[in-house]
Length: 186
Picture 1: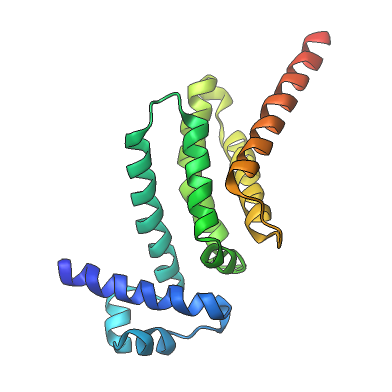
Picture 2: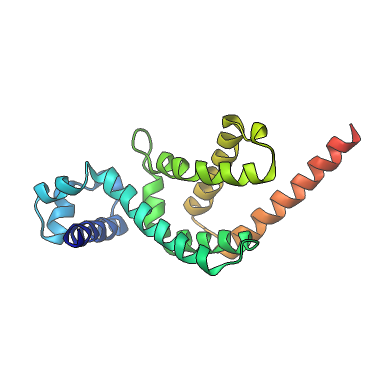
């Protein structure tokens, strides 16, 4: 098991290095293997394809980061957790900018969306009854979240995470309040 993780991490490091210099769609498995001194057989023993490796990088790094940070915060520190998550994406923005360029089948955006859906479902369910947390609502808010993150990270003038979170918070709270006030007048 330990050897397996060492191999996976070496392949992941090689892909990260390559993604610093060239688009993901131009990277070949042979390049990844060459960079870390492994053969293709070793690669395919651990991963189906380079998309699987890219998603594994997110899954292991991001989930470890999230678990570590969740344990440090009080339950009511949601915005601080969101800011820390955005800091993670910002610090790793070269990798994620490249990953977000992948479109179609095996896109990173789809993988990220599938990861976020249960989190969005849990959050919405904590705010409203289960009936209101149907698939349409979950998809609506998941898509909004992913789209906002993509737009932010892909922007050439990518603003710092604390500014992104502050603007997002202001928009969410301000518009939610305005919409609520408007519905009360009807």
